[in-house]
Image 1 (spheres, helix red, strand yellow):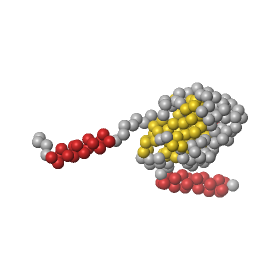
Image 2 (cartoon, one colour):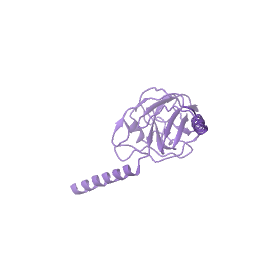
Image 3 (cartoon, rainbow, N blue to C red):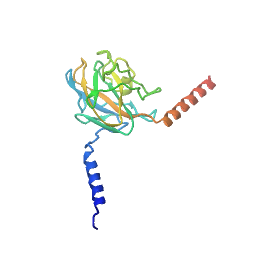
Image 4 (cartoon, rainbow, N blue to C red):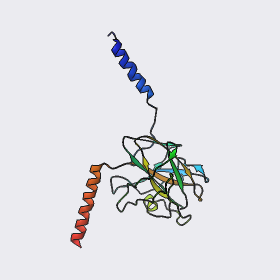
Length: 211
């Protein structure tokens, strides 16, 4: 078939547009806990694990799941809409982290894990930092949900923007050579939030009637 100037122009435009799209390869999936590791203070967060975290909250509530080993060295998450990244220390308390999204400090966000028995974690003070921990107050705890609900452990939730999010981080704690857990979640759609709210209202009415 003979190509017309118009068809050739369209083919050229499509090829140019395809080449202009930056290459990416996501290595993080939503709704899955991952375990990363770290060494001395002020060193980058890495993939791999010393131990695997267990029993972390996932969506839809009230499900729980265990962690898998995180890849190395950066974590790529592509979203059509906004999402969240929740990070927590495990095992010995005292580790603190700073997270970066595409090179900039990650912005704080509301935790997606509520209500009980899912623990929402602690609040970030900003600048990509997780909460301020209490060193050596707890030790040997590998349960993600327990760590999220314990203020001795450093944790926080951060905003993920629509598009490609390349997540990196730094270890700032005093307890050297350990591991941490993180999970990426989509922001619940308004319809899902409404359904959750109505369910909680129903539970409340049932409890009130029984009382």
